[in-house]
Amino acid sequence: MAKFDLQKIQSIIKQMNLDGWLLFDFRKSNEFALNILDIPKESHLTRRFFYFIPKDGTPTKIVNAIEAFHLNHLPGTQLKYSSHSSLSEHLKNTLKNSKTIAMEYSPLNAIPYVSKVDAGTIEQIKSFGVNVVTSGDLISLFDAVWSDEQYQDNIPVANALTDIAADTFKFIKKEISAGKKLNEYIVQQFIEKEIEKRNYETEPPIIVGVNENSGNPHYGPDKDTFKEIKIGDFVLIDLWAKPKKANGVWADITWTGYVGDSVPDKYTKIFNIVAEARDTALNLVKSRFKDGKKIYGYEVDDAARNVISKAGYGEYFFHRTGHSITTDLHGSGAHMDNYETKDERLLLPSTSFSIEPGIYLPEFGVRTEIDVFIKPSGEVIATGGKMQTEVIAILK
Image 1: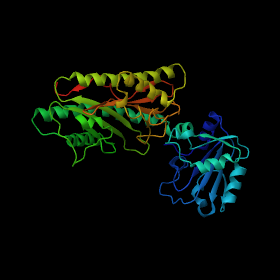
Image 2: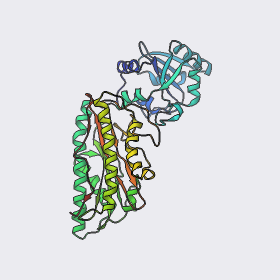
Image 3: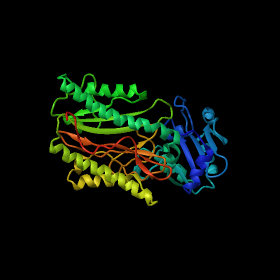
């Protein structure tokens, strides 16, 4: 998300009490390094490079003689290598005054999103007497923090998604009441057109799931695969959008409705459990920041998951509670996860993430999703309009 800024990076390194950050790539294996170092995606990278940023002073570029030009745009002293022995010598000399450095590595692969450096390279760096720690929080601070402009641009998008969700249920009511045939794909296309009408962009396919399809978290209809929507059906919609600009950040919500004038108890019961899980997770984040205490991604997942497990539906909640949101829909910051992974990254001011617990039964699934933004002051807010508090009775 951010452009290379040596002063900012060195400030973050000092904040994390590290001696430096060693960025490494081999054949585009580390998208974090390429993004942070402003290396174009179309670059022809066939050899290893290292870029060492010390907490103070001048960076060091260790590049293969064949491809030395790839880091020419960056500040620092250039060291060229050709043989593996010359590479080792350059690394040893560069790191000789460092005790602890960060790399894109996660102990025991607890956070696979961060594990971009192979075990052999980590072993090589450790052989020089250097302690290697994860760069997860460094990446978040550099690449997942929103600017004020991004936050201000996100406000109308988040509000628009809430409006589109309401308009979608009105559209279903109108079509069903008129006796027209309706299906998941038609509703999906309605949502995508509403996003485009507001001059925002999305990444299809938007999720519209009826009955058992709502129990598939990543289900998406297309022009050939869809279910009809009829009176008595349960409907889940999951929609996301961002401004049409390079640095635009995403908004992402999920709502549920029932095609009838009153909602059966079986749907209300499950929704209430999921909403309680959502609110419990949000309130934990709010209380920690209010008290000036740290909170990690896995703790948010625990808070939501415990509610669902205590209600007897733990086996039906089979994904993480939320994901980082940046210019990527699933961003480079902390995820709310102690299920698929154990995310030990900190939640940081000026970052955003989703909270979206769910219960997915064979006949239907309920998910309620909100986006959370932590203001620079530490105030924690749910973006967008009013959060869903009950299953929408679409024909009411």
